[in-house]
Image (cartoon, rainbow, N blue to C red):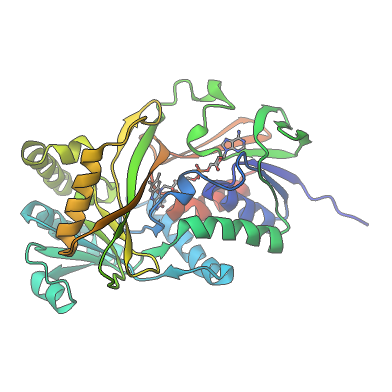
Length: 374
Ligand SMILES: Cc1cc2nc3c(=O)[nH]c(=O)nc-3n(C[C@H](O)[C@H](O)[C@H](O)COP(=O)(O)OP(=O)(O)OC[C@H]3O[C@@H](n4cnc5c(N)ncnc54)[C@H](O)[C@@H]3O)c2cc1C
């Protein structure tokens, strides 16, 4: 006797689409994924490859990140791709940043498992940069090469989980339980829309008053004299970006003070929404560096040459080494006050949007939660 597996059709083969494919296949669905391009080309292959723990606010988002990172630790060895478990180091480059890190450590350090490192401890660990006043060391971050990871995850899902992924098969419309695809009509028991920042195209009415905008980011790959940089590096600028650093009134006050200082002394940094992340993958002569944040209803047309130069200068100063530009690219993600949005406009249709730059860090656990509720 043949048993009927419920059929799940997923639109989009980025991180969110693949995470849901994995969760659904493991819960007994027959999964088909429809991807417009011949490979995923969106945010999921344009990011830092940072599985982040430190930046999330306590509560739901930190829990999702913890569960996802735990899942990545099981999955990455199975996928056989390069990854590193070297944590992160957030360097304070001035007194404003140092005050925020110190305040964070006192209030929340034990909960996040971070350690505050003094200038001496940094020097002992090989960070002899005089202006690095202190640093917050976090052991939990994972690094991976997203542009290689996503295609590998796709192949592995097809080989081991019986997931069918249909590339070059744009979904043109959704009608109850039927997808209108570039290759014909497809019927499913349930449809999941994971179309990344193109969320508006298929279901515009759902998002008319959603407050979701697009964030365009500038990223670069830089050359350096070969050297191993194990942890993902951030600076105190990230404290202005991640909600973890606004969790107490004192932290919010210090962040505000720093923001005002930057606006007065280095206005181009807040103007471009710059915060510096340096990620080294497996090539010791290259680093991935970013990013900027430009918010609007649509993706930015132009990339700022000034912002690229500022990022390179900040990076060169941080690493105390010359850097050379190799290539640069733009990434886009959806952005809103809440970090994600799950809607169920019809009993057989669910839409999932990451609306903050953390999809690689939380998607695996979020997808498990969504699939459980189908
Ligand atoms: C520059 C940058 C840096 C980032 N850094 C990090 C980081 O280090 N760590 C982290 O956790 N997060 C990071 N993020 C966020 C993370 O990359 C995103 O949250 C995540 O990739 C979103 O995945 P997604 O699947 O929703 O979107 P996408 O990767 O954009 O995938 C959506 C897919 O849907 C397809 N699609 C859309 N419409 C259709 C259609 N009609 N038919 C068929 N297919 C369709 C698209 O072709 C696309 O492949 C970063 C994002 C950017 C842009």
